Image (cartoon, rainbow, N blue to C red; front, side):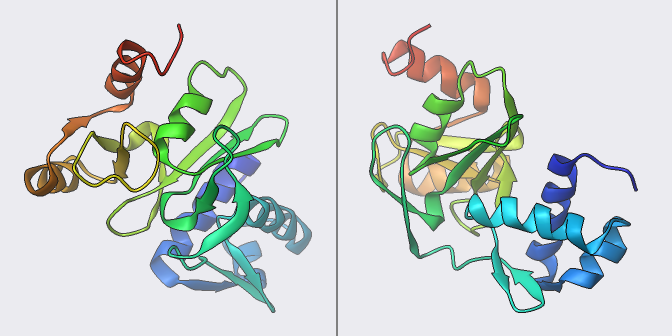
Length: 185
């Protein structure tokens, strides 16, 4: 199963969403890589705040905890529930406190290897490029305008029905932020 480090790391996170906790030797077997490769992948994921290494294994961190990291854009504390992580091809990790700041940091970057975000309802880790967003809802949990991420269009629409805002995909959010002068093109 020859995969890139980014693909392996996304797969590890996907498996953790299903199993909550995995052993390192089990991950090495599933991925058909060495234990040392798994350790390197887990170190990168842990540095990004996406997993928590525990004795002999790994688990997802509590999404309600506030991390000690600060947002690369606005310097606010990063809350795990809204955590947005960009990893560049050079393995630089860029953290944002919320989808609003994360999207501003992501926009126009040609060096992105992965961009991951948490689903607002379930706390699952999502690929930013596949997420749906609710912009300007009545729920303002961090920076303005409020941008919240969802795994499905149905969840985003249900949230919008209860709390207002507009359901958008990534390109639409970029357009909205550029028209509201948050992104300079």
